[in-house]
Amino acid sequence: MAKFLGNTLIRVGKKVVAIGKNYEAHAREMGALSAPKEPVIFLKPTTSYAREGESILLPAHIGSVHHEVELGVVIGKGGKDIDEDDWTKHVAGYVLAIDMTARDLQSKAKKEGLPWTPAKCYDTFLPISDFIPTTKIPSPHDVEIWLNVDGVERQRVNTGEMVHKIPFLVSHISRIMTLEEGDVIITGTPEGVGPVEPGNIVTAGIEGILEMTFPVATREYKRGSENSSFSNFLEHELMITMAVPIEFDTSRVLSRSYCPNCACTYMSFDPRRNTYCTSDCEATAKILRLEQINDESDSDDDQDGDVYLICVPKFDMNAINRQKRKQQSHRLSSPRDIPKRTMFYSGDAISY
Image 1 (cartoon, rainbow, N blue to C red):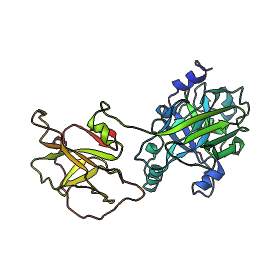
Image 2 (tube, rainbow, N blue to C red):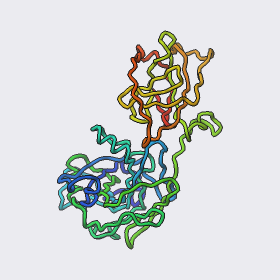
Image 3 (cartoon, rainbow, N blue to C red):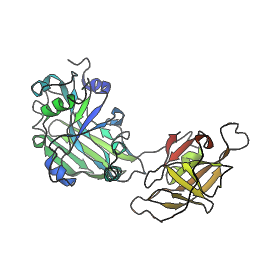
């Protein structure tokens, strides 16, 4: 039996186990011929939870974000190698969940054969309802879940259409990883997934049981006070800090930063006041602001050069200007050549 009850039980959970393409129509919607024979399993952190009264926050730089309404199963008694026939002994109740997905990031990662964890794991990317005890849902494969955006219905399904049923999912997952008290399994979304934008109101429900509402807003990244010069750049500009070691040609120096188009780790800085990526995408953007941010008062012995704050426009990922540049670039000779400072990619603080 669970030591905790209701919403407290959810708060003590350590992970969210998510199931992909668990409805035939959604699998086809996503380009598959049919639902997979084995469950598609991925994880979301519990830090992605959003509760009613909070907003779904969309970072400005990640492109299209889609809603995916799902029935969630809350684990009461933990265990591993659970038999299908014993699944009810381990389930304390249910939640309604919305698996928010940064679709552009996910599609790009899939195309490149990379994990798509970032597309699923931003804060507030898993809005969930209050805990629903099993007494209110005696048959989890016979409830209707739905989702509206601004009052227009986008998704609706009876959970009986799940390909992989809950008893099998509990057993199957427990043979891969131990299920612990408070963990949540989200069981897949039906067809009708689609984008949301700041200003939308997302409403989802389980017919006859509950309804929940979440406004959608832009996530604001801030560093320091409201009046900080860093904060003023975040809405429209990408900020990069880079070291320019004095012993190197400053016309072509690689920085430890992130290309907003392809997310590679090298951006090049040249005296014509352009910032361009040195990987295959070779995106280019005009620098809006160039500011030296270290001075003679800096006494860090590891710092062997000037440090600049470079501000360029945020890239429009759907209409990016790609210009092919074939120029030789010099790599920094060692990590000592770059001071230990914080960099910003569209407002995200990235320390190294």
